[in-house]
Length: 539
Image (tube, rainbow, N blue to C red; front, side, top):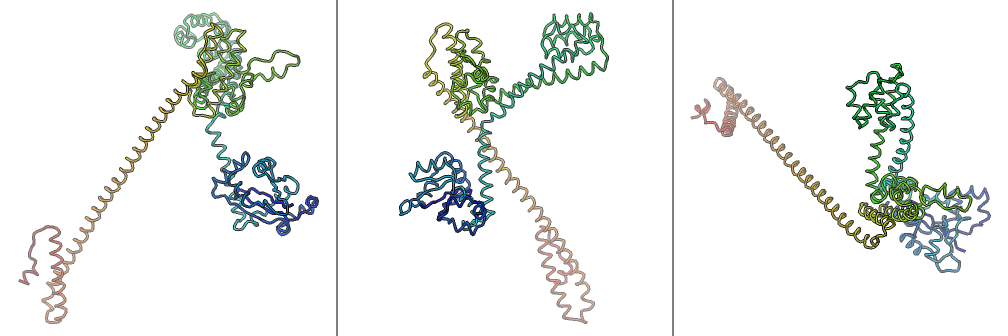
C-alpha cells in the first residue's frame, strides 16, 4: 500500500509520500519523540508535491470551502499529483474525517484517517524545512495573516447583521423594567411615611416618583404649586386632591431624610427617562436589522424572539412550529402526564392573539408563527425593506377577520406578487437616491480638486512676481553702487596719469564698462538719459 498524506497549510496544499512505516511502532513513546528530529522524520516522509496559494484571498476561499465542498484548487492539485495506477494500491491520508468523506465521494479512492496519519501530520513542526524557499518566519506570517482574514470575515458578517445590539438592548430593557418597578416601590414606601395619602391618589409608580421629586416637603405645597402638579398628573381634579391631602396630612419628616428621598427619586426618574431612550434605540435598530419582523409583530416581541433564538440567522433557520412555542420550553417539557401542549410562547405578547377569540387563539398563533418565520428569513437573507412585513401583517389581519366574520382572505400568491412589485419599486428608489448622493459627492470632490490647483497657481505666481521684483531691486542697487565707485576712480585718475599708464588704461576700460551698465539700468527703469561727467569728457 502506498500512503500519501494531504497536509493543509496557510501557505498552500502539500502532499507527502510515506515510506514503509510500522504502524504499531509509531505509537511507542521513543518513536513519537524521534518524530521531533528532522533527520529521522525525513527518513519516513518525503515531500511529493506542493501547491502554494496565489494570494491571501485564495487562501481564505480555500479555508472557507474546505469544510463544505472540495475546492477547485484542491481538486486540481490531487488530480495532478496523486498516483492512480500502479502495482501498489494508493491510499490518501487526511486529518479530518469529514474532508475524507468529501474527497472519497469526489475521487473514489481509499481514505485513511487517524492512526499513522495523525502522527505524520506532525509534519507541521518541520514543514518550513521540507518546502524549498519557505522560511519559518514566512510560514508563521502566512498563518497569522490567514487567521486575521478569517476572523475579519466572520466579524464583518456579524456587523452586517448587528443583532447582538438588539439582544443586549432587550435584555437591558427587561432588567430596567424590574429595577424601576422595585425602586419605585421603595420610593413609595419611604416617602409614604411623610405623605401617606399620596399613594391612594396616584397609583402609577413613575408618576409617584416624579411627584415625590416635585413636592418634597408637603408643608411647602401651596396654591402656586397647583399648575406644576397638573403638568405631572395631567388631571386638575387629582392635582387639587393632592393639595387638599397635603394640608390635612399629619406626618412630619426631618430635612436630612427628605434630602435622601429626593436624591433617590431623582435617580429613579432619570432611569425611567433612560428606559424611554433605550426603547427608541431598540425601535431604530430593529427597523435597520429586521424591518419585516418588526412591522409584522412589533419591535419588542421581535427583539425577544431574536434574543431567545440567539441571532437572526438562528431564528430564520427555525421552522414555524418551533417559533410558535419559542419561550414556552418549560411548559412543553414539564408535561409528565398526557396533557395539552402549549399553543404559544413569546408570540402570545402580540396584539393578534389577544384580539382573537378563545377558540381561535391556537389557530391564529400557528398562522402568526408561520408569517414570522417568513419575515425573519426575508430579513436575514435579502435586502431589508419593510414592504413584506406590512403585507404579512395585512394577511394576519384578514385571517382574524375571516375567523370572526367569515370573509374570505386574499390568496397568498396574489399578496406576494404585490409585495415583490412594491419591493422592486422601493429598491429602485433607494438605488436612485444613492446614485444621486454619490453624484453630489463626486461633484463636490471635483470642485475641491479644481479649486486647489487654482489657489496653488495664484500663490505661485504671486511668489514669482515678488521674487522677480526683489531680484531686480538688488541688481539695480548693485549696478548703481558699481557706477558710483567707477566715477570716484575716474576723478582720481588725472592726478596719477603720468606715473602709471597701463593702470590708467585699465581704469578707462572699467569706466566704459560702468557706463554701459549704467545705461542698461536706465533703460530698465524707463528713466530719461542724463549725461554723466565721464560722457562729457569723452565728447
